[in-house]
Length: 614
Image (cartoon, rainbow, N blue to C red):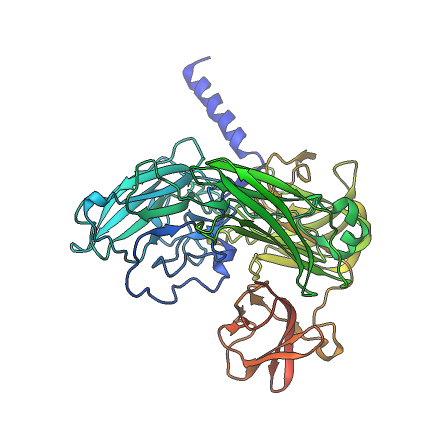
């Protein structure tokens, strides 16, 4: 065989290997949490400067940096892009701006992306004060590993020169663990009032020029536990602090969420037997920790369970994964839905920072099944030659005969909107561990990016489909375009996802949860169930659940000076009645379930339910 033939065969093999239809997981072209937050601008500049010590572990509950410590908000504060951070909460640097979309200057060659800039800090000290800045950083995490030309850079600001200097740089390697860094600040140009520091990441888009729907977020870096203070040593990278290091998860055995009617049927077998918590002693000495737990019924506004798991010692620099025995089953007087706030908190020494000693999880029961936690870290789909008729299926189980009314799918925004194609929505019977007979097909529906905070779009079925025991929902492609569905990487539920290529069903080789949710039960409202609002629209606002405010969809409900927003409790008592503005303050409401109604000229325009959380 001559060299030309040999080279041709190698190239042919590579072409076939990378061209035939296959399942693909790629980065997000957008972040719906940022895109729909309504908080993508800094509200006010910080006046004055901070004194030492400066401490930040990103354990607040917002998705943007705190304005009292930072002057910009390009990074994403979260608990989903890593599972081994020193404390709960991380700042993720990536290729998305603060509106949740790819930067306009994003290229394959590389570009400056996120930055995180501190407010002014007083560093007017002598070099002998041993001022050090320490932090932890992680390349990739549960996201995309940065490539050779990507980097994370730290810069210091010299106030009298009005100039930034690069003082540290990280380039990617092969390890994804957190690494500690300690930098001594001894140059006089930095030891001034008005000192600032800034992290910047440099990213580069994946080179999928022939597949624009696969181009998305990439090159993540995670940052945690920043400390800037005097009298420190090079090895002094952590404070004397016992803290939660990971969020709480669903207390159900096999689901993140499920219909309340279904849970009531199998509550004993589905209810978890423990509450898992994850905390760490970041101190150099043995510490004593008390673990407390509470379950609160949000709708009924009462505590339904409290217990303490007692006090124990934890060794220095040690992480603890603890399962607190739980003898309880969720119960509620509500018949169609329920919401429980599960809280775990640590009681430690008085000198510990208290912001990171509590973890909260909302256990929601509504009318849908979910294996995902509502946050996509990646995109999933089938791509390549032969994927024109490819199918994706997700296995669910109905524990009683029920009516499938709709299917909610989170489709990611796609680069240049390349994934806005048609597909067939499919429902199958079980065929012995794989999809069997077709129960229903809704043909030629369009990929839609949901307007809600978590990006789901609900495809309502024209008629109900009866399901019992195991069934499958998914899609059949009508093109070779990568559809880019949301993929939850940090909440894996293996063995439930399958894909079909060339006549064969395969079990997915990807670890994670596809963000697709069957909706069951009584007919879905196209208006409020109350006869007064029959034939009215369902209002779209975000976020929901909400803590302080809600923002309405301006296309559906423009601010015109003629529209009022009425908020009532579930008994119909009026609690708020205010003119429609860009943002409606709901901070005066107690935790619970409410009805939001839009009214113009005395007539209702639409409604929606609102969940107010802490």
